[in-house]
Image 1 (cartoon, rainbow, N blue to C red):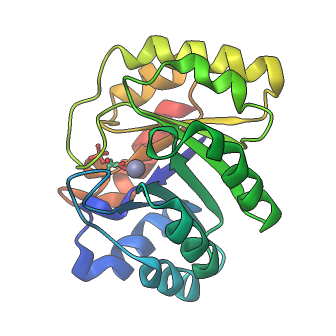
Image 2: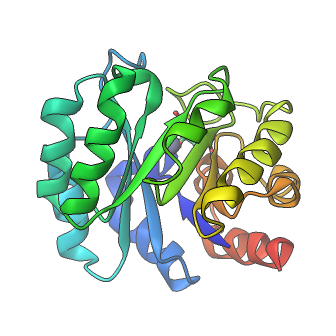
Length: 219
Ligand code: DX5
Ligand code: ZN
């Protein structure tokens, strides 16, 4: 079970200390949301943030959630920046390109991940399960932190876990959006094992206390 804090809703002027607090509570991977103002109606970070992150925290994994329909420029830029895992949206490119980019990531030493929006049929995973190391199911529509977990996601998590188990049970299944002390348990019971947590962790202080609480729930 992995908790991957999303820094989007952290205090970005105090990012270093926020990351340290979470790390001291045992976090080893952070989820970095890249929004291009086009695939989603919001803007966030660029490759420089990832470079700085890896320079300051070389032992901590940078998981890039790429929300951009310009994979040709953006995927190589984040590989160069030092990402450890990169997951891109199925909806952001022609279907024929998905395998190409999954191979590209693997051949550059990254863990390749594929992201599905809440309304994308889960069955598309059949075509890519032999190449992905992680699948991310969005449990909100991407673009903003602080939204409510979509309850219909639970059935999708179960179906995805079944499809992935047929190919490789070691593929991790991640959820992103509206994860808190209540929804994390539901998502875990449905079959998820990586949990992106944004506003719940960073909104009103006590980051370490909340990490500990989530870990207890996941035990
Ligand atoms: C939404 C992002 C999420 C978001 C999660 O587009 O992909 O990673 O920051 O934030 P919370 O946990 O607040 O829903
Ligand atoms: Zn995300």
